[in-house]
Length: 315
Image (cartoon, rainbow, N blue to C red; front, top):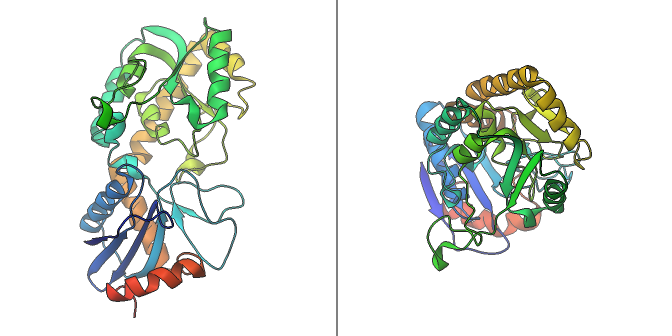
């Protein structure tokens, strides 16, 4: 795989361009948040090594938290999630490689660690969640519910301290908890949206704990196969039934535990790194056989087409 890196610009932030001409898979890294773009490129390089990839015209990959094509059929995008009204095609996200900024250096190891923690009895039967509440007002609503129902919910807010100002994984309140720490602590887990889709959903499913999942418009590639009340316990987007769902889980421990085990089995089949590489290869095969609309709106292509010609990606 031949990768080119562009200078950072606000206009093309959180974007990658991919193409394959002949035997060579190429990429233009237009920079992104933290190391997301680099992780996606590592996954693509692995997919190229483990799967036969056909040639395809340039594709845009958006590496932010929400899809970006608001229904315009004249251009296309790949993204980490899709939603009603958007045309983006969902692909596996950066986390299948890792997320070192939050302590996940290797996804496969993180899955194993979450599962090992979930095999132990939880220290606290309550539902627990910890994260940055500033990324979505619904998280502050969750925090308020935790204050109102402390016997059922244990909710923590995290304010990250930039690595340049302190040690890695430092938080203002000193309350960092790794995913395995969260699994060891709480008998019930919750996944809730942030700025868009939630990357951690995959790891929480691997834990085997009963997982409550808030409804959200953002759907990752595997979402159509994930079944409410079989793989997870659903919660309304406004969290209006969260307390009721927690009480149900406590009153029906065997049923809740069975849902947790089913979610874990789903994750082991569908949410491994190997499964993500296969999904990437399948998506690129579809794009090769049935080319989507050109990458990006015309104004974007006007700027980037000359760059792609210089790289030999297009004529």
